[in-house]
Image (cartoon, rainbow, N blue to C red):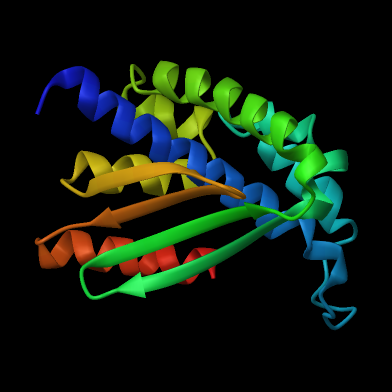
Length: 171
């Protein structure tokens, strides 16, 4: 596969991972957790994590408007995982697509990072996507009418386990 195609596939995965982080944390304040187990301010903790990530930081500025209207669904496949992102308010689609473009640019830039730098420049979701693709996962992605979809698969059982773990983390 051409190097630019591989970079584009990894880039898309990193962007999707960043969306997962945002969507996961957008509903964080709505989950009921015991007081002793709950962080003091889960939204602030999430935003701090996103701002440290070279990719997710581009989503952070959109969380006020997009967070409430983004939904995610994850399907574990026999050889990987599929992740669907949906925007429930059509008036926000242009902002969603523009944010994706910003994240794609940042994702492409992160592919030049060393593995050590990736650990300090990317959140755990972006690191997981990057690691799985570098380990041989195949990724397909595209826009849908209401958002986007990403499918990560592999014929390697070790990579399949990494993808299953990612699916569990995202669900």
